[in-house]
Image 1 (cartoon, rainbow, N blue to C red):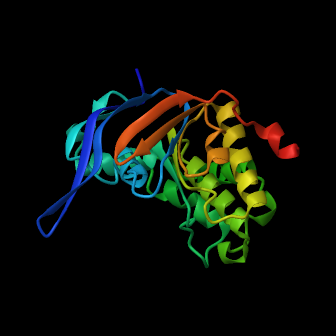
Image 2: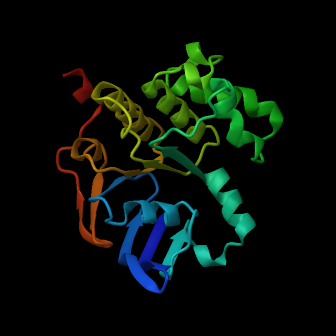
Length: 238
């Protein structure tokens, strides 16, 4: 069973009687453990797609199944619970609390989870260790570099042990070196933990860390293909 299944997915927006199609007839699956990149120019529907797949918005037509269950069958409370428990999010703008420590930022999703409080500390520290920031654990996020902030965001996405990570332009606000380091973390996380990753990006080099690239144009799938020469962690050492 695929983790994500979409069939004839459509999304339209209406503004003062004007209807604008954002997604048109989108059909694809993402298997558990896959690393998939979604690419496309501005206005192609990438962000709209992420909003729907991440339970942040609903489609206009078509079906979306997550772990075998149709999104339309979820109540609002169930959507929120699934989003917190089974999904992790990494955003271009980090979305950290600026005057709060790295530890507190990463721990935040656990407060709204069913994880016993006795496990919060160990899970938080493990997630921070996984992104190489244990030595910065007690620093406020406002004291960190852009690359470090994105590492915190990755740790926060990991802390609840989600089934899938949605990464929305995770290197977009970073310089090349920091962006490469972030992609190395995501790549290694996928290789070692076999976690499912769905990456939204406009950068070809970033997308080629995925196993498969779906290209969108004008709200439609233009191509869906395997990556022939996938980048790996070793590429950063060149």
